[in-house]
Image (cartoon, rainbow, N blue to C red; front, side, top):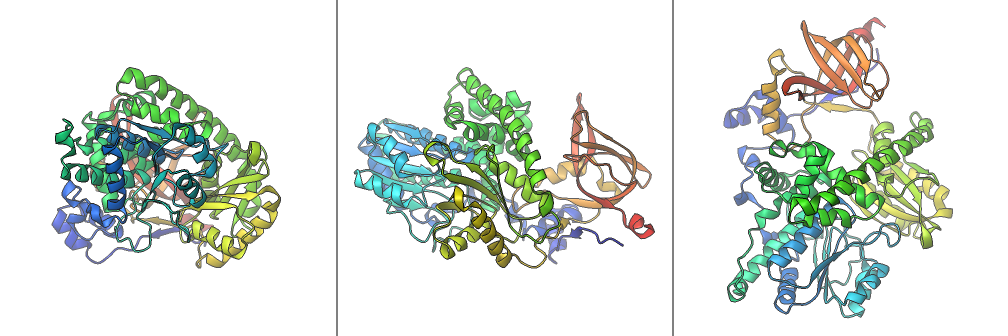
Length: 579
């Protein structure tokens, strides 16, 4: 008999108490318990439960310097990053500072293909003509030692706001706000836009204390109006949806659903067919986010920033349309690159190699991260996909790394950097994703070293294809009402995954979609027929299967029906036994 890849999540023994406290179905209580929910208060997403500002290390020093800049009308530049998190954080800070009365505020984002990531010396050099007095980084800067030093030498103060893991040597900034700093007991892992939101809350508090708004005839802005940006950046950046982040996302989604969102987001919803009144974290992650990210991947995220800064739909729509077109180009590029990459890694699927590195001359630097994610998921190995540097960086390779559970990819790169100081020129990132630059001539050597260091850090069974589910469902759970109950307990996402169930079904019918990429199924369980779809599946399944699935709502021509989204399939236990 072939062993099953499906495992049921472990559940704490307090699920019954939680079921009674919340008055919810025991299945839902078990789901929440398996995700660390201890009591109903963990699901209370009111503003009163927001983690206090003063727990974020460095926030007071940063706010004090910003208040001085506002009072003295200094020139402030927001130095952003070229993804959705960096874009939303840039828009939030520019908008908030202007609402606070700052008149000389602008943003700048480095061209990823020419200047690379972060506040580099070259990037700072491009800012010198506008003579900034203060640079505030958002979603970057924690590794920019040289760039910050260069700025300080030029008489420019730098405040770093970031959420990436800090290096051993911190930049000599005026202030650093980062929940990842040693000694910071913030208790949450916000996205870059979340850190920026907290800092602007502190700035507003400090401005209130000195009577700034009254003496300048200003109305203090309600920063809740920026929560649509916080929700978007938080979801798209795939940070852990801990309680504080779920609170921020929930509040942001509520504002969007009530029509209290900026025209740029509304325009993107219109172009992607998203009903704003029913928008959820799913649409943010799979519809709006990719369109915003596409500009930074292919050209310049400034298009996305301008879309989000627009004051009306007429101004926002041309930018949103350009983002929509970028996303179509990104899809085509990603499909071509993924197909060639899958061919290249075919030998790794059953090999003993632990870490995989791939480089193709034709790969697009802005899309390698997406391809690395697909590969890591397919072969269950930490994967780095490299693209050739451009222009003066042609002797370099720029890589994007994606990991699997149990292997901290940024720490792997840190180990390599320590053991082989000449091998990595620069790197940074998180547990599951990172970026790096190496010399082109070092690729083969780096690939072998990476494999060795991944093997050293990999826990037992790290590469096994295990699918964790929330168990089996009884017949009455297969309903739209149960789907609505699940959705009501969200937002779901990173580290707070949407429920996944398993069960055995008979396959009555199966056919591929018109483009041949997805498999549509008609399944029978307990004499009941279910429609199901298995995305990115181009191989037929056995007549009897054991599947991992999510019950979902499918709407077509105004009619809502239950549909099972299949995430994993294997032969049924009965079929295994008979074979």
